[in-house]
Image (cartoon, rainbow, N blue to C red; front, side, top):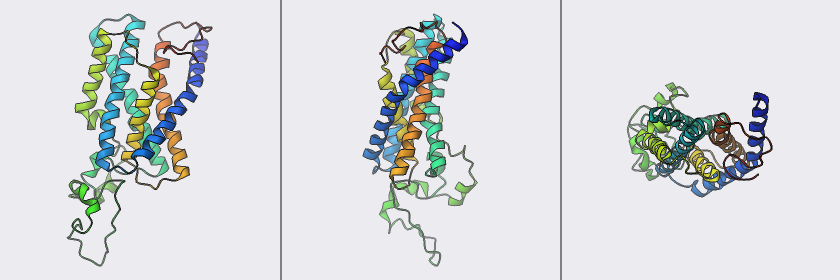
Length: 272
């Protein structure tokens, strides 16, 4: 099969999966509307649940496809491909694209690594602006219980936040939640190594990825919810899920096999 034909089939698969991915992005918006009133710590917990789960599923898919189509049984090779593929895809989908979407929309706030040097981090609390004529020694926590949940983030100089570059404020799950994300990737690879023919539904992969991306947006957003913002977030979720997950579930296997152009069934086992 020529490269042009292969690219045409990949483009066809991406086009056919776009409506389904859009539906998944809509569920992500519903997810965010349901949890928009939760605290920063609660949205962080949501991300710590769905992001490692996405890494686990992605590791299973990537390692299984590589092992089956390349007929490779070398564990170290499968480990390398599965780890890089899953961490790379999930980080791009759940962390990098959502973060830059937040930056473009102007709603991003410092993430977990930056909150230790900033004040009153959290998109679910009311921002208190001190009166410049009053003494500033008192943090005001006793008078403003709504910021009490973030006392741990108020110990350092807030001005330090302005000196941090954009990449310093980028939340990377495999670094910040390394104790959850990396074991999830390794577990997915081990499962794929011993059960390479176990199938992960594409729908489940899309939904988990969408909710992980939505959790990241919730965690780092303090803007008021408007129709325009919701529409823009829908686009961010669509891009965050469509490209990385389709690369993992569709493009990757088609690089190693010779698909039949007349075959009407997707590589993931469902009909369009």
